[in-house]
Image (cartoon, rainbow, N blue to C red; front, side, top):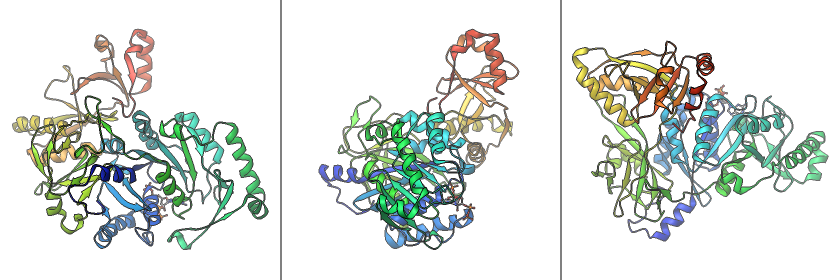
Amino acid sequence: MTTAHPVTASSADVLREAGRRRTFAVISHPDAGKSTLTEALALHAQVISEAGAVHGKAGRRGVVSDWMEMEKARGISITSAALQFSYGDAVVNLLDTPGHSDFSEDTYRVLAAVDSAVMLLDAAKGLEPQTLKLFDVCRHRGIPVITFINKWDRPGRDALALCDELVERIGLQPMPLTWPVGDAGHFRGVLDRRDGQFIRYARTAGGATAAGQERLSAAQAEAEEGADWVRAVEEVDLLSASGGDFDLARFLDATATPVLFGSAVLNFGVKHLLDLLVELAPQPTPRPDAQAKLRDLNAPFSAFVFKVQTGMDPSHRDQVAFARVCSGVFERGMVVTNATTGKPFATKYVQQVFGQQRSTLDTAYPGDVIGLVNATALRVGDTLYTDKPAVRFPGLPSFAPAHFAVARPADLSRSKQFRKGIEQLESEGVVQILRSLRRGEAAPVFAAVGPMQFEVAAHRLVAEFKSPVRLEPLPYTVVRRLTDPAHRSLVDGNRSEVLTRTDGVDLALFTDSTTLGVLRRLHPEVVAALEPLVAGNT
Ligand code: G4P
């Protein structure tokens, strides 16, 4: 995406380009500072010379559109799904994981397209619910995670306590690479554990330009920082004694996480994070196809669709499919084959619809994300390829739903269109569809990771199928997978029921954990047949 290469890029070119890629996402709970960190990362990569002047939600939307302008001016590639920039010799792809009210299955699917993740924590809050859910997916997929403890510039928790929380709540061994000097709120800088030096940060006005920093020897640090430095050294000794020394193999096998302390808003520690991503995070590796055979990075072009964004404007069926390149070179204008349908897909529309703004999407290599416009025929999980050998990657997994609602046609005369619409939404992964004999065919249940998925589904049923839907929320909060259908009748009751998803998985839904507890006590035989669902493992 950065520079145009001829279609005939050699296999050595592809391997070299793939080796430069670092494709990752930031996972965080809303308000931990993801937008601020994203800006700061771009700033350090010198994509922008001044961090978007405005912080804060409304202003930040402005920043994104500023990026669009910058994209034109500087030839960097930004889509709503990925920000790409060069950093030294590396090409960094930062994929967006939408948070806030638009938390949905899409948020999880992004993690199928990355090679590593940055877990961003608020120093005052530590692990929060959304971080935990996203982290579960990382764990399940074996994605290496770097942890950035943010907002150290203001009062927060104790650094050792935050590290303990990683072990105790998610079983992830922290391996701090830096250690804060000065309590949260009195941040002086960090001790660099790799060389024992003190990196002292110098504030710049409002953090609007890259933070200045200076390196001091341990002796100088002790002379100038006194008790704060001595305490940091003592705590680092404690870390070494408790297995907190850096081990690359454990980072790569996702059992331990390098930890950095900083402040995104002041640009403290952000450059360090970027340097570590380039140094330690994995480059794209050959991806297993549906038969578990690895597709070499320098095999002909292949990619899989991990996100489909449908315009909410019915008069304008604009649909963009975002695909991650797995092998070979993508050249705009290529005709690729959709492995699901066997049909060709011409990628020239990338240019037509986005015009000038997407003109940089000329070439992409493994690890890059391409946004295919007018892609109404593409679905989440589809594989695209060109040239033999044909390839098909495994579809994306379904994720543990947390919201449920019975869906009925609001206009009975449109029941046929309603059924067709539901089939379509299900096949696109917009919502999961659950059914049971008890509820009957006419009243399927929508299940979703985030409630916004319901809104999208309802809107599309009206806009595309002229079939409005009536959604009746169901009060379930606890979900288990029922592995033995023989126990179905034990679960079905007033405050619980079993519903079957289209992929055949039986989900046992309970209004609350007390109901589940009562069932377990009354029918101990059912306990073994009720498995907890992991976010990325349903
Ligand atoms: P998000 O995308 O993860 O939701 O977080 P976002 O970057 O929007 O940051 C949430 C709030 O936290 C913002 O404050 C932001 O300025 C602040 N923040 C982010 N990083 C840091 C940090 O390192 N230190 C401190 N002290 N604050 C940080 P806001 O009140 O929403 O906006 P603003 O008025 O402060 O700009």
